[in-house]
Length: 182
Image (cartoon, rainbow, N blue to C red):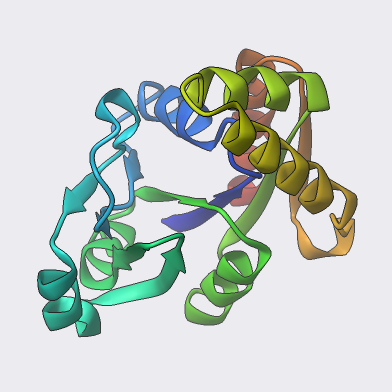
């Protein structure tokens, strides 16, 4: 059916928004990722955890490969293509503008959606995520604020401003259905 490239800064609500879409119907699926980072429990999405060696050995299977910190990330391209061809909406949570650009290169008809959280919401989420390391939380908040300042509306099919994710999901689904139906 389509690829939904869902982006926001770290802590912006990509995972929460993606999960809320998944419960709306079986036609939504979360893209399968491959990662070398440790598990974050509930925030693991549909990720497969690999050693660096296994990731490198299977690297040819992955698209949108990135190094974030010391960890490798990628998406299983054949899994995405299979689900896309089976009339599913494949949700790709992405962290960077270049990921979205690369997604559009691979799947030209992908719908590019930016979830733009308030700065207060970012601070709250990143502080909670990094309770054990306040300096890291502060660094990630600063990075997220810079990415929000660099946001160019011409790069997106839809930008959703959120103060809570229930609003984001409702607006996203409405816009997505309207776009697919047109």
